[in-house]
Length: 163
Image (tube, rainbow, N blue to C red; front, side, top):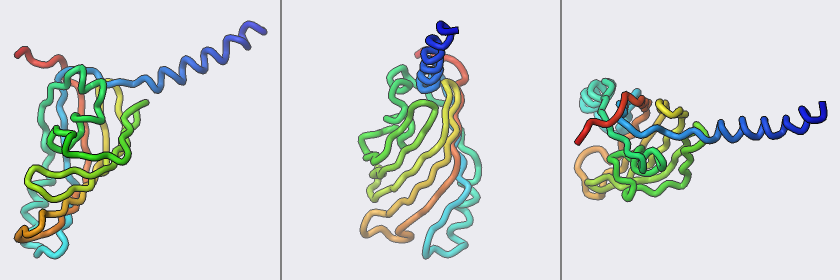
């Protein structure tokens, strides 16, 4: 009985560590974005309606996740255009099956985007909610701000295609 009691803390520690050791598998992934809401303050509804119709359709794109990206998924993998150098995250958690990222990014055409991503993942799946608020660059004609929210899912589909 004493041996069992001495072994119990080791078993608990082993399970606790294995839960936190979730890592994405490199390979071919299908990443799907589906925006569920869009707001453009000050824009007429007639101008926003086509944007809502376009964004409500899920957009799936294949992505070959390298071993480096799988080891650091909070870097380039979830950045809006794949370039994490344009983003500054005040919170960047992507470990133990939990995703929690908040920060700001500079889109390629200028302006500023506040981004929030929260969700879960396994070795072969990603399921997250996201929201963004994009400020247009100074001097831009038209809407100065766009707010969007939606969901992002990912699933590993196999190995990356041979180059």
